[in-house]
Amino acid sequence: MKKPDDNFGVDGMLCFSLYSASHAFTQLYRPLLDKLGLTYPQYLVMVSLWNRDGQNVKELGKTLFLDSSTLTPLLKRLNAAELITRTRNPQDEREVLLHLTEKGRALQKQAGDVMQCIGEAAALDAKTLDNLRSTIDSLRGRLHVAARSEM
Amino acid sequence: MKKPDDNFGVDGMLCFSLYSASHAFTQLYRPLLDKLGLTYPQYLVMVSLWNRDGQNVKELGKTLFLDSSTLTPLLKRLNAAELITRTRNPQDEREVLLHLTEKGRALQKQAGDVMQCIGEAAALDAKTLDNLRSTIDSLRGRLHVAARSEM
DNA sequence: TTAAAATAATTTGTGCGCGATCTATTTGCA
DNA sequence: TGCAAATAGATCGCGCACAAATTATTTTAA
Image (cartoon, rainbow over all chains, first blue to last red):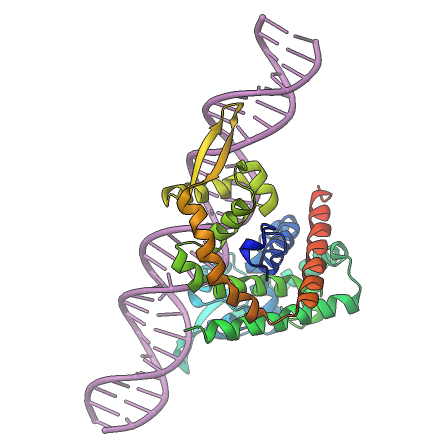
């Protein structure tokens, strides 16, 4: 991470590279996701539920690194769009269980078709992509640890 | 980029790695920036102006990949905090020129002291960091190109 | 020379992202 | 047993992020 007085502006700051590249991905996704009626964070939720149906809000938040104040309204919108159901767990009424509807499950096939082109835009071979991903993921891990120990 | 039906959930998606790592950086920055009274995007604007004072909104947006509808309210808040001034360019009244105030300039020294620890949290040597950054930056470039040519 | 096109910034509306706070349920332990 | 602590979600407020539409100024070309 460059210090601000290194005088290269935002260029040279790793945090800015991540920030701007993440937005670039979102913008590339947007027109494709528009066709599915999803936003990018909603898409991430659907991917997670396609992978594992019946999660509760807590579990979902843990995989996406988002808390309930972000997820609750988002999940209500997915519910309003009839892609998921939200039901309290009878065994523990504190938990809200998230289940795909038929419509929500059906969307996965549509998404698979549409999403193919994102990978092509990235234009990275499997090995490079995998290295990059794991480098960033372990960086994220260290940042989370540092954030925890900051207090 | 993994296809959604590869059944690994959001793990394995490069876009998610970037998205979540970017948020992790923001969260690590937050308590430090709170001391300066800045949000993370406001900090990016200040870094850009510390590097080059007197930019207009368009130029700033180009370096940060943000458009004026995001920047205008943010710049008004920086102006309200008396860190910058916003004046129309007399040569071209369409442009708004952004200048640091004395207070805005002074903040750079404070920021430099505080930001040191971010680099340590990332725990990357200079070479690795530089490689990672340039890999992500060129990826961002390809994504922007793909987004443009999508229409 | 002036009307149309281009450009720069603002405004408006929607949906995150998150800190802080609140409610409801469950757990634990005195 | 009963009451405090812990846990899971929901709510509220603020500040991005961005599409779409609007306003004001400058450029252009007829």
